[in-house]
Image 1 (cartoon, rainbow, N blue to C red):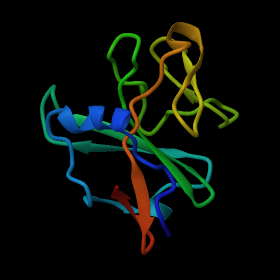
Image 2: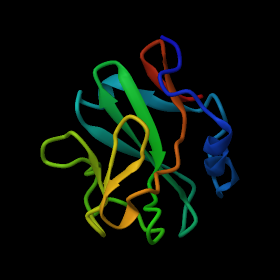
Image 3: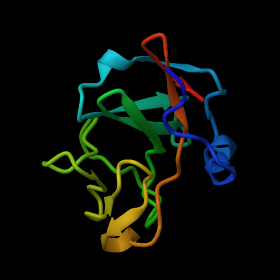
Image 4: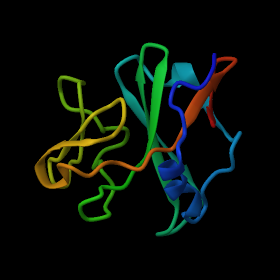
Length: 131
């Protein structure tokens, strides 16, 4: 399978963060994420660790930094809790801001007009990989 979330120049924001994984880094099996769910991946230790999450919709995957653009806090309170109850949007549990799953754009709340930082991911041979 090829890239399902194409990187762009704006996506390079994640690369400058401490402990950012290298392109080609394996995150784990796609099957670790149920269809319509999300999973967090953490690299490094301490306060500056690199936190990202991946949302799965069928065979499509979408990766983002786990960092709310409103106040630079993680979006989740509980492990892997990134989506609304309906599973149709990403939700910041800190501010209740809503984001589109397919591109991370802010839809409602404190982050309307701002978006999540994309971390491009791909599926290769059944594994999630940083693109």
